[in-house]
Length: 365
Image 1 (cartoon, rainbow, N blue to C red):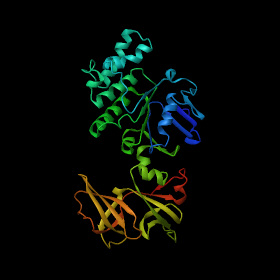
Image 2: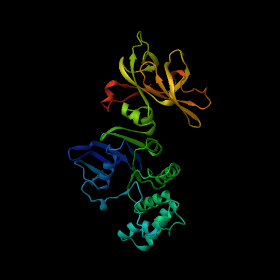
Image 3: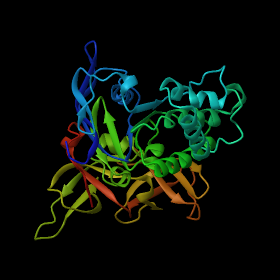
Image 4: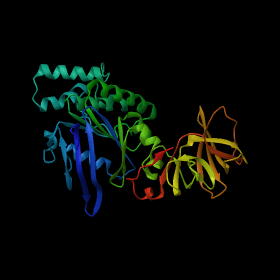
C-alpha cells in the first residue's frame, strides 16, 4: 500500500460457496483518480465494486479509505455512492425530489439542500427538467439524474457499475464526454466497472484488467493497449492478433529477431526460443501475394468502416485467422484475394509461459 493511495483494496478475496469470485486483489487508487475495472462477464469486477460499497463483505482482505479500515463499516455510513447499470429512480418523485431524497435522509438544512441540488443540476445540465417524472425522461436523462443523486451527497468515492451499457451508442458517447467533464470539475475518486474495452480506455486514468477473479494488468490505457502483460490482456483489450512465433538469435552480436513461420517481424530484446507475438490490426501492411518477408494468406472477409477497411485473412501456413486494417484509400482487396502481410507498426513479444502466468510482462519492440 502506498502513502498516496486514497482507496486501497488490500488482498481482497471473495467466494460464493466453493467458487472463487475474487482472488487476492490488490489495487491502490489515488485521490481524484478515474480507474476503470474491465474484464469479461463473471470475472469478479462487479463483486469487487459491491465490496467497496459495503454491500458485500470480503471473504479475505480489507478495504482502506484515507488510511482507515472501513471493511466493517455499513454501506450507509461509508463516504461512497453507487450508480447502477439501470437508473433506479423513485417513480412518484420528480427529478428534483429524486436528487433531494438522500439529502433529506441526512437531515441537511433546507438552504443547504437547495444549494447542493442547484450545483448538480448545473453540473449535469438538468436545468428545465426539475419537475419531470422519470417516465417523462429519456434513458440518458434518467442516468444523468442517477448520477446527480449520487454526486449531491458529495461522496469521496463514486462507484459506477456499467452505467452506460443500457443506452444507445450515440447517448453513450455523449455521456462519456459528460463523465470526463464531471470528473475533472469535482475531483472525486471514480471507480468504474465496464465490460466494454473501448469505454474503459476512453474514460480512465488507469485500467485494471480482470481475468477469472484476479488482476491481469493495471496500467495507463495507452500501456495496456500497447504493451499487454499477457496474451489474455492482448486479446481482450483491443482484440489483438496473438500468433505463435519464435525469437531467432541474431548471432555475431546482431539483434535477436521475432518471427512467425520464419517470416521476420522485427528486432526484440527477448532471448531465443518459442514466444507469442502480439500484433494489432492496424500494425499490418497488406501487400501483394509473394512479397518478400511477408506472411501469405487469403482474404476471407472485408468490412468498410469509413476511414478504414477491416479484413480477415487466413494464413496459408497454419490456417489461423488474422485481423488486419487498412486505410480506406489503400488499394482495395476483395474476398478471395491472396495477399502478403508484413508488420510495419508496434508489436509485443510475450514469453510462451505468459499464456498461463499473467504476471509476466510483454515487451514492446
